[in-house]
Length: 305
Image: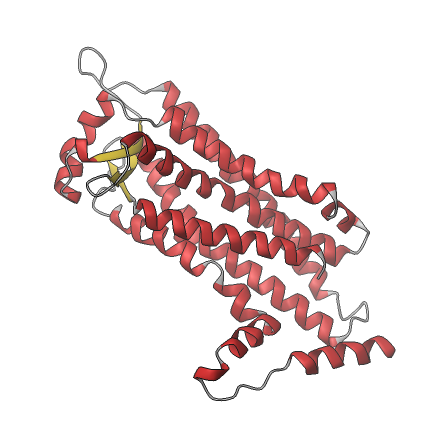
């Protein structure tokens, strides 16, 4: 599997770090009128509010890594199926470049949170009552990242904030580009897999390719339905004056659930990983026959045919 294992380790490491930072922040994600925000309670926070704001923005940055990392996985899978030598672009210095792309995506989201969505007086007053009613928090007990699309002007009239609108466009592009790549690469990979038998591939290789592809498909649906779809609705609804405040609490639970379940597909769909995982817990359960050796023998036998 070559450098693909390195990509999977990178993805799993990111998921674990995402889960850890999420447990530290314990964010509330909410929508109120023309504003969406992520808020963190500092009531029991042992450090300064500035550090809390940094940690909250780091959590936002982790969210920006996700779509690019998934898209890169699909590109790798397509190159592997294509077999035209393009996997050379996932080795050596090129692999470092691939690793840097998701990090830059994370830096972008951190930048949006830190520079566009920082605490300000108008936003604080706008969400004050909602935060107290829904979370029982006073604003001096919180830090937040928030986008208020229609702040009141000096006459109290709501006006579209072009600065926030620009941030929304940047955010949308950063989500749309990797998912477009994902859809195209996924469709091409599916077509290639269907042709494996025609190309004379052995049963072991075909089965492994299908398992890896299914794992990636599930790993795509998870962030779509647990992360990007709820967040996308949350981001967009305030721009069009759609009030989803009574439903936005669901986003908090889905957002918290995602990093915990994200590593599971590759662990349980790919048989080699699944069997290795079961063997770790052999002492706690009945003996589970491992098929790793059988699969390896099957592969070696197919190579001699």
